[in-house]
Length: 369
Image 1 (tube, helix red, strand yellow):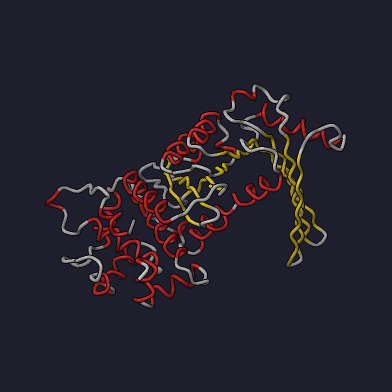
Image 2: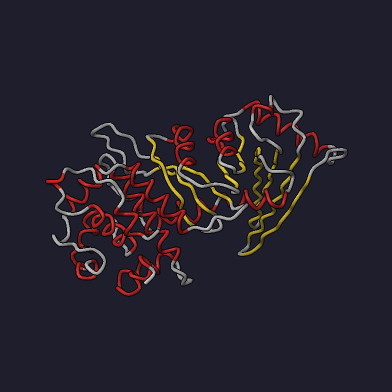
């Protein structure tokens, strides 16, 4: 599914008399500009005026480039649901998800999208990340972090997850979410913290007791790996057991097969830090695979959220009106996926610079030309 076809299918919220600039032209302009280093409406409009001839090689742009006010007005009224649905459909058409690929779900707050004058809170985006493909798969906006519980099922419904492992932080450790993942023919790996106090206590007690006896008589699998470099050494250990008899009502968790404990020790000079995390999963007791899935989950922080914050300067954006913050986030994720799909080994930052300077390279990023 090519980019222009997807953008042409997004429903335009405007009446016919207000369609001086076609919606697909506006969306293409925004995505191209963001892939080339622009950040806000002014930067996007300036990019369009400078590159109008190049843009006309792909769409007519018969009436030229809309002003920054027009861009903001349209994107504030564009249905974020319609736009994110188009993004998810396009991404899944270009991503080849394989059995066992980790799809990480996590949230990120757009910190400057709040509007104190109108009493609106900052937008919180819940995103899905394909670890092996290194692509964003979709996103849903919520009014606050606590609404992740309702946003996650909506996001999962956008995705084709068959054969994947869906990893979610503790906010998503809910029976209904586990049931939905199973219904979509995927496995789940859910972090367990104090928001599920009885479950958390039961898993912690199980592994504390088992470790005290050196797992004597306890069927389990264990995996350990060590990373060292730059004066730092990290040791990670993962224990998995399929014994669920000590859990409170394990039958209420659809497909539950195993409980997991992951321990991380980080040595930095004389400083030692220690962290223990617990999980439930529909996977069997394969400690190596589960340890790799746990580690893959953090790609959403390092390769999506961090890049949006640092490279695209998303947290500095003061776009606040209606659907505009969520839609601009979707445009950034479009741009990021396009840059990541371009096969050269350069960083996203360098690719954006090259796209700003080189029309042929930008065409390659956007359309594979």
